[in-house]
Image 1 (cartoon, rainbow, N blue to C red):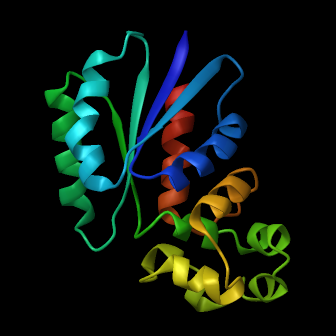
Image 2 (cartoon, rainbow, N blue to C red):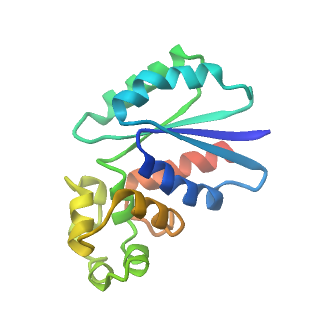
Length: 183
């Protein structure tokens, strides 16, 4: 059975991926998202899941926010944890700086989903050409939709984000990695 197991640091990432992955993966693949209660919980407990998973054909992806850390250092640490758990081929992806940059990367979809015309008008602005470089993507989203909540946004936007249109390099890199696994 072709199975993709994604480990995330938070529920909002799981919510987003549950809307996105059915559109990326071929029909003969199944996926499971396992979320943790923050990055420390993910790093502390991910080895157990990687060692205990029963399907020997399963492929693993670890997704974590960069926050203010060094991307290369974070990725190297996660990869070492995967190696230590017997899964050296796990795909490690870092959402730069935070997952909400992926939502900012597709302001057209965000504008439509949240009825926020100001977001649609901001598409061409230099500030949003590389949402991964913004300090707080969630703060930017709340400028368009003051009551924006991460989990609700993840649920709604996972079904709408367009990898071809999205301006977030880390989102496109994540999608490319998933497509390579499933090829």
